[in-house]
Image 1 (tube, rainbow over the protein chains, first blue to last red):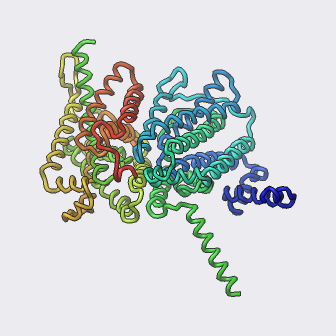
Image 2: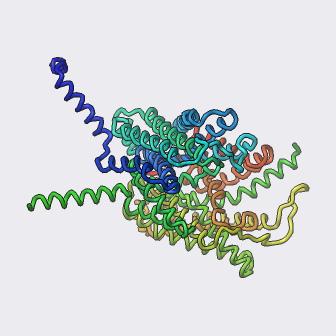
Amino acid sequence: MIKLIGRSPTALNIRWISKVQSTWKLLGISPLGLTMLFIIGIAPLFIKNEYILRLMVVSLMFATQAMAFDLTIGFINVVNFGFAAFIGLGAYTSALLAINLGVSPWIGLILGMLVAGFVGFLLGILTLRLRGIYAAIMAWFVGLALMSLVTVNVDITRGPLGLVVPLFFDSAGQIRYFYIIFPIMLGTLIVLRLLTRSHIGLAFRALGGNIDAARASGINPVKYLVMNWTIACSIAGLVGVFYAHFFGILTPAVMHTKSTVEILAIAYIGGRGTLWGGLLSSFLVIPIFEYLRDLLAYRWIIYGLFLIITMVFYPGGLVGVVHLIGNLIKRLYTRLTKKS
Amino acid sequence: MQLTGLLDLVIIGLFRGGLYALMALGLALVFGVMNIAQFAHGEFFMVGAYAAFFMAAVLGVHPVLAWVVALICSFAVGVLVERTVFLPLRLRSREGWVMNAFLLTVGVSFVIQNIALAWLGPTYRGITEYWKGNISITSGLNVSADRMASFIAVIITIVALWLFLQKTRIGRAIRAVAQDERGATLMGINLSRIHILTFGLSTALAGLAGAVLLPMTQAYPTVGFKPMVLSWYVVMLVGMGSISGAVVGGFIIGILESFSYYFMGGGWQDVIVLSILILILLFKPSGLFGAEVKGIWER
């Protein structure tokens, strides 16, 4: 029966369309989100100000990091507190290869991602037996150990002095950097979206909720937990490589817990477990922060207080606010149409 | 290596370890009783260091008085934080408490650190010494009077805290809450007061550590990070929430550090200690003296 229908060309068409539709649904990007992405994507063609472009590149970088970070905290409910170390791992891998062997940064992108992903895989195995806060602290310790290793091996990494890393391009111009990081961000968003909306994402959430219950329902914790750590860490490594060849200077400070906290703050202000909240909040927080530069340390106090308030009183974050407004508009709209 | 040299290393390790034990005690206390994995512990160390600096160097009071003031200051800041941050969270949600509280302490650490930065600036403030002179312990080892004094202060504090927890009514109430919160409430223990007291005590211990270490570490906004990390090593080594274990663990980490510093050179001690820790956690996730990792902690 199905085969018979499949032969007719119109049915084939319908099936193809419905397949696209279902994939689209899986992606779960609303028209609003799509417009936002589109506007961000074409903005550099109209903005000629290098400074603003640079700010956008930095925002995109943080957005990608926050999304990868959210994969662990938002779904399996463990903070990857050594996250920054994986950014540094990718960055140092590519930087050292570029400096010593003259490997192109483009190959470095892949290699850095692989190395960070591999160490993330090991970390995933390491944290398997640990639960909740223990796994977070373990990840933190591994991150600290990696940072100390980089700092101590002065003859390879020049320690705290840092490395001068060749850039992606010889000439200046932020727009080309934008179009490296933008596809990376978009790819991360799409991959993570598809992942978390499939049965894998469901397994992540189940494991994050109650590991014993998840195991009882036939979810293999080893497979999914290790998968989660590996993916999150490899994205961190990928962004790290971009970081190294974008800024051109690399010090162990990249791997410090402070960097993790910055990413954590962005992911949390955006909304835990939402993925695109990271994109939203980094595009709000980072430009505002640049704007408030004159306030010096006070802006960090505001930032921290904002983080605390979000955590205590509004765990939904910015995405929660967006949903709230969306619902309000919807309700208003239905009320108006009903009246007329 | 000669025997006296080995002994020296052990003694140096013990001196270092005493302070780690003091810090770790606070961490273990607050985790054991309130299930808060404290990331802002170092900030209270900083508060203590600043308080001691302003008392000892600016006002020129006696060191012991400066220490007491530092203790009180960090106690007060701790109580303030508990009331304004953790109480609202506890009232709002108990779901996923451990992880949320941990992330909240990250935010608290961020705020306190930057308040110090905005208010006092990034300058290093320190004093050269509380007391002059050295005390020779073995033939080859001289310890500065400050280190000796700090060690004595640490031992006195640890013993006093132990007596407080074991012998007094309030101490028993604290231990009861650590064992079973609901049961303790049913016995008529005022949970809110115990939480204030525990959090304050824990931060006061960190503050005292900061105050006695002032000649060696000085005071600046990010001074607390290193001691905080070290006390976390201790707590993870012995198992979270094990209060008596924290003391032992402090000395273990101190000795481990002084040995790896001697044999491998500066900078490597972190790598060595962390590698050993990660190995221990790999085979015994609950730490050396820890109980099975179960119940509320895993959330």
